[in-house]
Image (cartoon, rainbow, N blue to C red):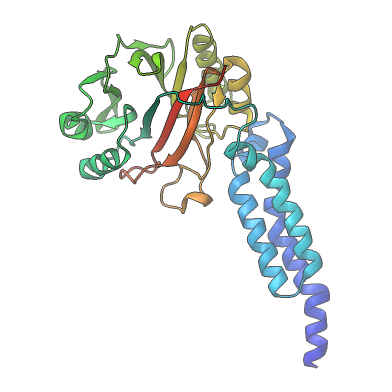
Length: 321
């Protein structure tokens, strides 16, 4: 009797359970490689990295239970979803750092408008030791404490305070070196400023795109990313764009922004949102984009700030000619 049940388990129940478990990851993987711009397919394509890890975990579980054929199928699903995830972690055509060039360290974070944990933000910034800082969704409490948060960054520019819920929010750009005049970009939650750095003058842009669903009309995120790309493409010289794009770099927003702006995404794994999950299970929606004359030396996540987003620490240098 026991042998019969064991045989039925291996031949019928285990494969059925494996197929059931893998269907969501398969759908995400297919969405990720499809390049299709429909909003529901695009929504699935945001989750390729966690889907790849989930399928890999299923493969290991099936192998332990001696369901070897299904384990191979699960590995295939993991590879399918991992195609987009790998592109997020190692973008194609990324510039090569120039040997001997100085570096600058950028700290960029969505602090979340409801976050008043000034101590956590201060500890995160001090641990990162940044040269340049871009903060979006900075609430009233951290803005009031900027002298404490950024004592080594005397050069700061802020957008006007915007009311949000029961408080306000602003974008902050800070630097160890002089900054020019802040320019708000037309029709966007985005602003640019010229920074003097050891790499020469760099145009820094802080950006925050809307969510794809359900908070805006269907095409609003596409409109915003296109408008941002057009306004940035006109700029001359090195550029860094950092902020919350509410999309991974390999879905429709990232693909369109890269094509229209001519900028290149920095590596974006592990994920930045939601901060409550382990980083490999999150999705990378907080990005740094650079012009081809710059290169990424290092990208890592910073310490928690009390936000639902993790901060990103990016070390940049000149690219090889």
